[in-house]
Length: 351
Image (cartoon, rainbow, N blue to C red; front, side):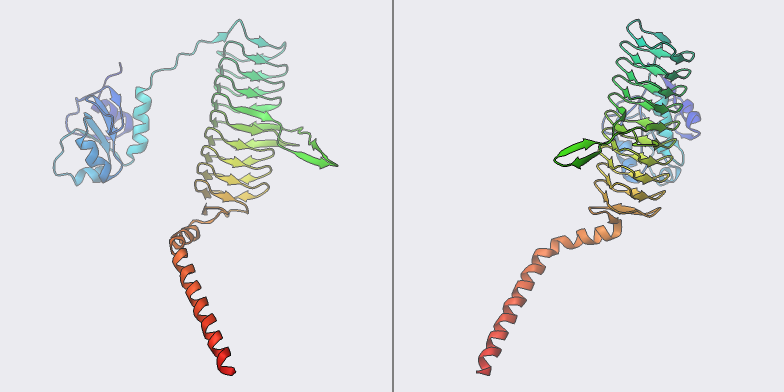
């Protein structure tokens, strides 16, 4: 079990201690689940109050929140951004991952495959001809790597990942279990009464420091490449179609689907189950709320929500008006009835 003094954790996150700096911390927890020996974090006054009432031995929070306290019943670590600090604390308590370099006897590796130093290749891995594996790469059991793929240094592929031919992964990437990269895009043309498949001859290029979630799929391009920029993080169960270009440092949440040929700028954030229409542009710094449907270009820096997607404030105004629709319809019906009665009377007086 890892045990650290509170002052050691404070030094790790460049924070300051209020209270007993010798307090021993041996775990990290949420406020609801904390026990003695745990540290929790609070990034709002509301959560700080709950944290101080919890069983945790210490709390990480902001200095201005601590200044407002009248009774400090627990030791504190104070820093301006407790969420970022808490990430470092989580890393400190994370059990080390044991990686043993070597090639499992059941792996099938084609002649001429280039394999770097300190590589770990697990059971039943298949690597086809012309592929290149960088230094320190970890390939877990049952991974399939097609011909002419390249995997950058220190990249990890978890179990059952499939790389089709001509997929290039950068350095320090993480691809979680079951992801499929480089499958054919979904393209068919109706010829007479038969759907004829469109050949997909391109590849996939993924930059450095990209993380790809479990069971996510990234399709190969018809021509050229489908491209994912460095630093982008992709959640589980995301579908990225052929010829999509995604910029750097994007965040794409689970269930999102991006149709073929769409261009996503740098620093874009997409909430869960967002959808992007084919061949549109989502500008750098834009945000798509959960389940937003972008069916036309989204300007840089804008936040869109709803379906069809539109500026978030417009969507909120529309949602705010929905509860009043039944009453509005009732009043319209009353006005129509009154108008019909007036017209009937006016018609009768002419006679």
